[in-house]
Image 1 (cartoon, rainbow, N blue to C red):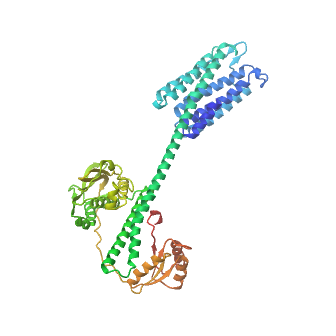
Image 2: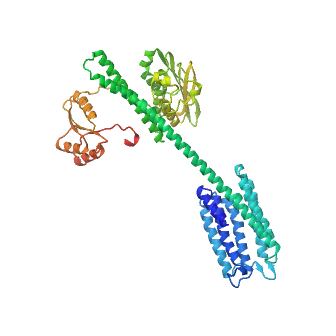
Image 3: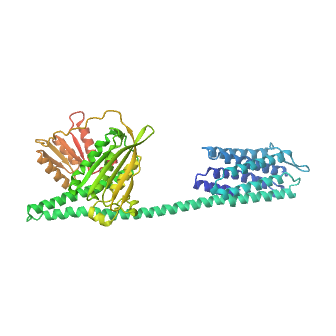
Amino acid sequence: YLFVGFLGVFASHMTPDPFLYGLSAIYFSMSLVTAFHTLGYYGMGVFHGWTANEPTQFWILMRFIQGAGIPLVLLFSSRPRFIRIFSAVMGIVTLGGIALVFVGLFPDCFLPGTGLTPFKIGGEYVVALLLVLSIAYSLRVRREEEVDRSRSFEVSLGCFVLAGMSFTLYTDVYGFFNMLGHVLHGMGAWILLTGFVTKSVTALLDRHFYDLRRAKEMAEELSRAKSAFLATMSHEVRTPLNGILSAAALLRDQALDPEERDELLSILVNSGESLMEILNNILDLARLESFSEQPKPTPFQPEMLAREVLELFRGRAMEKGVSLVPFVDSDLPDALLGHPLYLKQVLFNLVGNAVKFTDSGEVRLFLSQMQEHDGGISLFVAVEDTGMGIDSDEVASVFDPFHQAEKAVSARRGGTGLGLAISKRLVESMGGTLSLSSKVGIGSVFSFTIPVVEYEGKLAEPARPGRVAVRLDGLSVLVVEDNEVNREMLRRILERTGASCDYAKNGLEALKKSAAEAYDVIIMDVDMPEMDGCEAARAIRAREGEGGKVPILALSAHVMEEYR
């Protein structure tokens, strides 16, 4: 009984199995009562003056605990807080029953010269009935994957039932049926221990070892993915960086003619833009994987959004002789409620890829309304091209980060292979699934369907571009930046517009200079040594009090949400 109890507790601590924990509470209580039953016999010499009645009282108390406890645990162990209450009740009943025997208030169970009392015999029949009902219930609810374990539990209960029947037939504590009952009871306990509890523990250990093995495999896979990521990023970042450094080094040559200088400047700008695109894609991917919250739906015009995206690629497509064609369903509402920023980025990536991999023909963008659902509608979006297509073996992996269908394609067309991975996550965050259909030499179709709601309100008029003041004559600016290159770039930009600049390398210098001189505006880097921009801004605001407040503009390379 102690083994059953200990193993049950051990197993229940490995996994939240309330039935095993309840079974442990029953058999811990039974083991305590059985110890008194064993020590109570005259031959043990522990409790002087006792007859066979007191050990028999402990025995029927143990049987009551078993007969009442098992069906209760079978029926109610899955309910919240039941096990705690049940364990407490088991302890109270056990200690209370033992106390009743010691003070002589427990009903007599065996009278020397007479044998078993009706209370003892009737109690055994009640316990046997409860155990038979427990067997029937276990047979009814057991799951297919637990047949072997449940069968051991049911056979052990059957042994306990037969033992109870034997305990109603003897008149002498050393009689045959009393001995047979003890043998059957021991068999039931052994089967319960080896066939049910031990198998439960073994199954749990197997499951935990499997989980550990899977965790180890996943850790190794993540390590390989990390190595692949670093290798890919090393290559992708170094490529435009080499272009920048090489072009910058060549620009130092004073003997360059204007045409060569323009070519190198073009390489410098294009390499810088490529590097920025790579970093932006990585940050987009990291942001999507770090944050699960969706932005709130906002109204937008789907047709206008589609045409804006196509217009961005119109020049590049015309250079290649590729037509950009929108197909907008006439039944599609003018305004929808959804996630236009996500949708625009997905279309930007898909149309950009389509133009990149199409040398002739068309790139078509389809928008249409699908079936209604829960008071809303579904927006179907597809981008179709007549480009080179993707081999069927590569289709499943094109959405993996940093994957490109062929190395030759990567070398010829460029890119990191992040765009589709980002698009896939964006579509999923909008409630859809991005799918691909492609044939080599014919073209590809990327499509998805997302839930939206028809917007019946009035949309604000699009903002018209106004005139931007480009002269800052007479404006006094304090630039707070620890990076010398950034300071120099800001100086050149601001002085070209007519502003006068002063500089500080950190927040402490900014505090001193802003206290000594009144500036019209402060441009403050966020991350700096000694005192960062946020601390410096707070200190400046605290010093200003309720008086006039100089505008402070934050300057940072951080774009992740947590830095805003």
